[in-house]
Image (cartoon, rainbow, N blue to C red; front, top):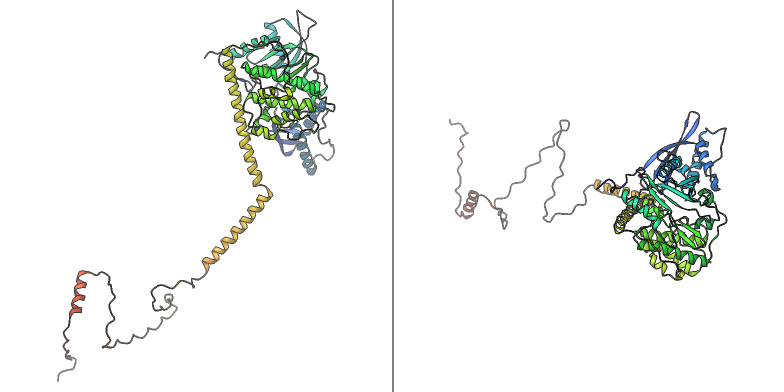
Length: 562
């Protein structure tokens, strides 16, 4: 394998879409001011954890950066006197925890570069705007046909994607927009394949695909040049904002959403489905369908940012897809993204949760049916429709008329795209399994620490103690109620302990009375134990003796002879 065929080495392995979780563990008085120790975790894995220390003034600076969103955040007020008292520090720590929870749980605030720098200063300390300008200047050296007008603010939620307004030298009145982004964690194509695909993008022609003027890539990332659209995206249309504003100001706190009419929903929805389905039929995977990637023009909707799949960027709804195990493919991810677009077109406000089981009562029946088939908990567990199923639904039955599209990808590049798509889907599957394992572990821990479980364990422990005490008492009782043996025997005298030197010996019992001479011997038992041969012969001779015994004469020799 040559150097051009090998995958480009990643400089950044971070997935910026992974959520950051934080907890303030302690507060310390350091040199006359209080520092709060924050434990930060990236994603669900507990081993990707680090600690940062922040002062209250740094919380205040972060809040100043987020004020342009017009979102009211619960930052505790500043206090000059008594701010080192123990009770006040403990109370402020709790309030700052509430503030951080509100920031990291918000779908737009959590992606702001200042929030990332606040919680992860090591990986987000680089000035991304300067890096983008350096990369763009290198491109202009190789293609000096453009002039930079001005850098645009962060008009999108991707913090590594930077935008510039440029002009072609041949047409000074035509405004173009250039977007630059670094490679993402899903970048699986080789340098040669990425370069070939970026050069191929300007040749893609479809009625519902916004054309690319020029595509370029190097070892760090890629850029794309398109015509600037004054109307902005579908999300700008719904939120009634200007496309060149900062995304926090555009999409932060909205009070006047403008939902689309049912006729517009049917027309634009079918156009979106047509272009996404055609891309998959041609072997190009997308995975980035959301309202900010759809432009609205006089001719209808236009899909943009198809280069994201080539550069390996993770999709906007990937964190939700990790929690939904039925989203196994990138096509299913785009179906899920279309469900969010449809929800926002008819309701105005975005859906900030993975699923939704309660929809507005005034929604038309066919709209409600499609939303339930994609976004309901039952659909996300049982399976969602395909792009072909959505196109065939009654809501999008009216097919648009458009010219024949021209999207041609060489077979060799199609095979590379297929391999890259399988690698992206495999990473998604692994994250889904990991999330499910952590969820099961959390449920077990929560059940183990619940009040009902604590009472049950306490009851079982008390019962076990009583059982052990009963068993011990039974073992200590004297064995006075033993069962009698089968053969009766005379009662034996109770045994007494051996005499000691201090206790006198017991008197000798009297001898047993003599047995009378005419008493017949007791009969022998029916069966005797087997004896030795000599003993058996002696017993036999005694039993067979029938003669009488001679009377003995005793000679007393103890009397002295005179």
